[in-house]
Length: 155
Image 1: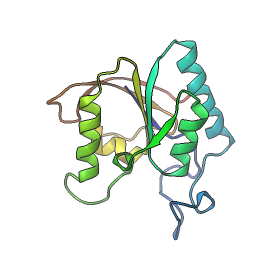
Image 2 (image 1 turned 180 degrees about the horizontal axis):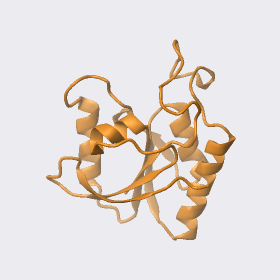
Image 3 (image 1 turned 120 degrees about the vertical axis):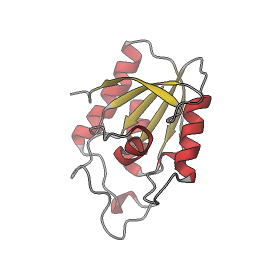
């Protein structure tokens, strides 16, 4: 399973501008040319390494959707489980994400395109923009899976 933080979207950490609207990409932080290139390069790397992708889930934020779509590895579905939740404690979104991770059996790869704060809530660290976290599903794991490795953002 590949858990990917969206490609480069300046200014980096810090969320979206005040008053942004989820249905209007013009009001959000979006991928820049570097981020669009990273997304295309991620898809190229998947194809070059023969990675079979069976499902692609993305946060509904435009920078995540654009990353997932530009990878061109399969149809993209949205999931609110991939949106960070600022509420204290274990949120329903995080519980759902853990269930998705733990339940995946393939046979191919599940690609999840999300935000740094979602990864931090799940695994306890903030990945860089465009980084891929590789997980192996495992029921009973606090995160729903085990960390297998990290792949840096393509350059």
